[in-house]
Image (cartoon, rainbow, N blue to C red; front, side, top):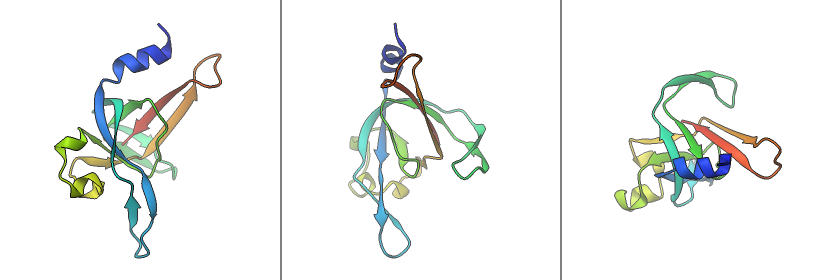
Length: 120
């Protein structure tokens, strides 16, 4: 079994991902509509360096199957479990977390297959 097959096998949880959009002109960010992604969500707390080089406590570590944006948000659950307004604004959800760090590493001897780790 290769790494990609292993990742597919362990990414059995569903999360909702909100891609960050443009500034709304009032200093607030807009969000794309939430989309469901497959992941492996481990609720471990650990110290990490965020994208600004500041040490912070990460609330969870995830394995995901696609690239995501560091300024986005993730929620462990499905779109169906959210109210209509929550589906387009992750800040309305207490358990939606900002993505603090995204790591993407190529598989050994590969230029087009990657392991993707997200820290919240």
